[in-house]
Image (cartoon, rainbow, N blue to C red):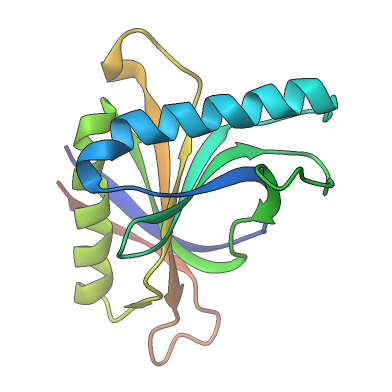
Length: 164
């Protein structure tokens, strides 16, 4: 798959999350389970206007925040926590297709950043679009916080560079 990588500034949306640690082979089970628990909390707490599911990968040892975008900060219950994704400069790409191919988008972003002089922070996150039974119709937005490359004072821009 080809990916269009862009660099842009993003806001820091509030999230309702559960913190977990999981090995790579456990993600397909851990992520939906944790998101389901967060959705149960959202419904029982009557949090207004919940958004999309997401996973924030805090660092390489697979420490995760799994949850849902929410409209406003809230008091957690010790299990479900109020958090947010990082604000600032990110490299991002849209992955269209099955979740088991998301690694391709991550690889493309990391390689593109290396080739274009951007430094990665060590964390990243995925925001999942609406569910489709057909895996080819799934959309996942992938984000990596980056430091601006030397000579790019604005720290943003787009590249027509495609990687897949």
